[in-house]
Image (cartoon, rainbow, N blue to C red):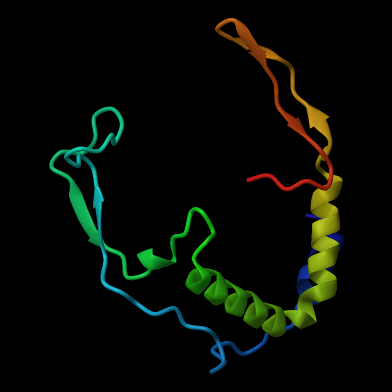
Length: 130
């Protein structure tokens, strides 16, 4: 490892965690089934018998990002994280710049055939990708 990396890591100060203003998500009983479920397509050879697990935070799953309750909680978590890690802002920026320097942000992959069509992948600098 280079000395620069040791220097960056050595400059991080530790802070106490567990502040009382941290947003805590409520736990709500919910059972999740993994495997074969009557009337649902769970792919080829789903587990049978299925397994069930309790997930008290399942309510936080919001694939469409429309639940105001979930979005409000996430905004509170983000604000808390920003407050608690404000002292790391310069390091965060430095690490992000280094990470981006190793990526080709605008790129086009080679076309490939799928049936009668050709497909390719493309990324454009500044756009967000899931």
